[in-house]
Length: 265
Picture 1 (cartoon, rainbow, N blue to C red):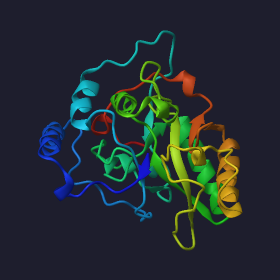
Picture 2: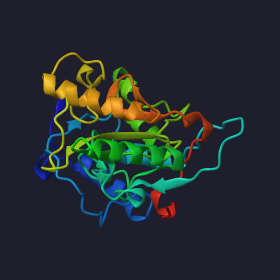
Picture 3: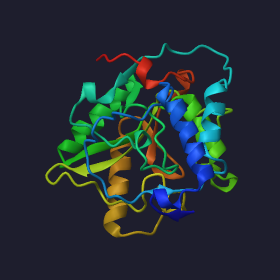
Picture 4: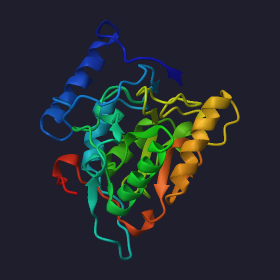
């Protein structure tokens, strides 16, 4: 594991270039296109956490797209995915998986948007309003995630880092539209809060109980957690930025791509 930026063109082998070309061919078909992305709403530091995938993404993506989500039994609520920024435009976005600034250094979403099931989305809005009274706002990195992306993450990540990605056999709470990855930004300066780890960092620094870092980093991390918990969210034990809504088990795993989700309030 290391912190690095995506390799430059001169560093990519012919084989890697062929794989990248194959991947872009899939993307161009509208499966997971990464062109004409909306401009990100918040400038964040250029550093991001990166891993070397177990297998090339160009090989794994077609397999993930062809796979079938697990069959679930029981009764579930009807999906009602709503876009967070339609409920509150002051919620800012930095959807990393629509860019190369993510742990796989490859765009995986075709659109930089954030959806959640309506009750969870409304709870996030309440957090945003509570934070505003104390000078902060929410910056969302990810929310609803199609199941095939969860499978891709699992297959690409080394086994010793699987604590940081969901098992596709059971699905992620992101797949149910009831999980959100987020941080804080300062309302006056617009600056993103400095936390004990980078987003998606696969190390103990990402744990919400990590005792290192600076006192201010820990204060802001815990401050975010308190506000999220007050609205029915629980932090994931390995990631300070990941919060699950209390009703996540009431919704089935979804594999709908962003393009197929309507925009509604």
